[in-house]
Image (cartoon, rainbow, N blue to C red):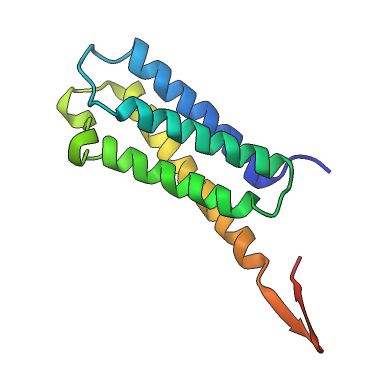
Length: 139
């Protein structure tokens, strides 16, 4: 049967989140990160991991959890890095990142939009339909 599009997109997102984390540690200048930003990052990894498990298992919750993972990752990157809002802000423009750092922000943002779009399409494809006297889920 193979891996679903949603699972593939979520696996790619997880990999890009890992690369983004390595970039923080290895490629970016040393700086003090906002308190709580580490917890946000861990929560993001956990949410994407849970979404992957649901997608690989082809469970009913795969699409809703995938939508949450995609939208949540997008929101997290925007709130923390682009432009950086509130107490968790670590705006990239403030420390002059190189092209690799910008790419490792742009790629997860782009893929998170893709994850959310795939999940939403799956959710909309499962709308209940009425046939005769019964209600069933569309495939």
